[in-house]
Length: 136
Image 1 (cartoon, helix red, strand yellow):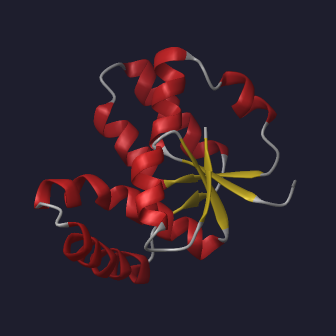
Image 2: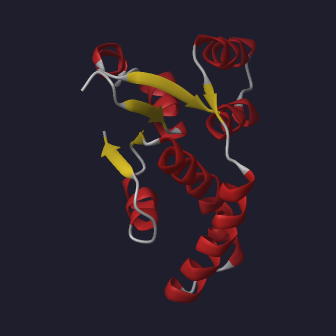
C-alpha cells in the first residue's frame, strides 16, 4: 500500500541503532514515511554521541513531522486516567506510557500506521484507542 502513512516508533530506531536488525525492512517499506516529533524528542533525550544527534537531525529534515495537537494532549490525559483505573497503574507506569499514547493518538489523527517493536505497550494502548499498528 503505497499511499499509507507510516510512523516509526522510537523502539524501531533504537533497535536499528543498536543492532541494525531493521535495516532491510526500513529500506523496503512501502508507504509515505512521516516522523513523530515525540519520537525525535525521545531519541534526542537519549543521544549521548554527536553522531546520534546528527542522525535525529537528519530525520527531522527528511520528512514532514507529525506533532500531537492540543486535542491529542487532552485525550492522552483522559486515556491514561482510564488506563490507570482499569489496570491499577502507578504514576511511573503512566509516565512511561504517556509518549507512546501521544504517538498513537497522533497516528490516529493522521490515519497513520505506527510501526513498533514495543508490542506490550502499544497493544495495551490499542485496547483503549483504535489506531493502525504494525509490530516488527
